[in-house]
Image (cartoon, rainbow, N blue to C red; front, side, top):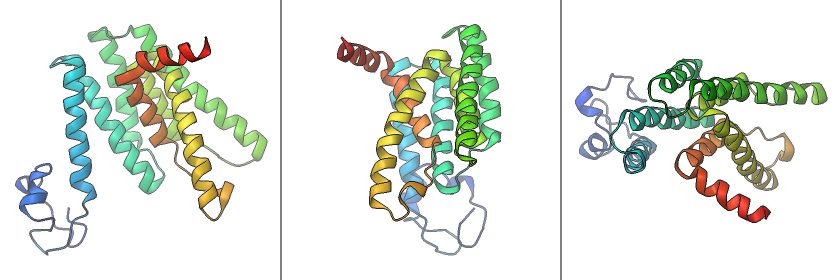
Length: 218
């Protein structure tokens, strides 16, 4: 719907990027300006679709992995705006991710199941540990379910990579924002976008990044 007049947007006015350009970034009904953010996200989603096609080809594997990518994009921007990760995305995502392991064989169903358990368990333990130490909640249940969904699609290796890379990037960004923002350490930063970024990096560059990291340790 239009953020201004709340009128429902017809399907022909909701074609990614093209409709925004055709309507010159305004609602057909009331003329309210539509944020440039919408077509930019649509463009990013399209570019990811091309990237998945190049990496995995036109296959069922590519289609399901693009579904994961699309879910991660939606989760990222919802978490940034509202500090929540909707269960309506993560719960079905866990189921679909596990079923794809049974059908496609990209990873075994055991790897997917272990990824779900490890993904949910790791963040649950971290959240519980943080609460015991500080008596404050430092991580929401949405992050736990998000990592379980990532584990369902990418397996336990993807979970470890996602946590490591997401935490590293999140720490750097968090420190930078804390130093530049009033409130410092009390600044609340959603973790979902960093987990999503870690999962995307594993999906497209996992072996290369792991190989580079191993070379550094030698």
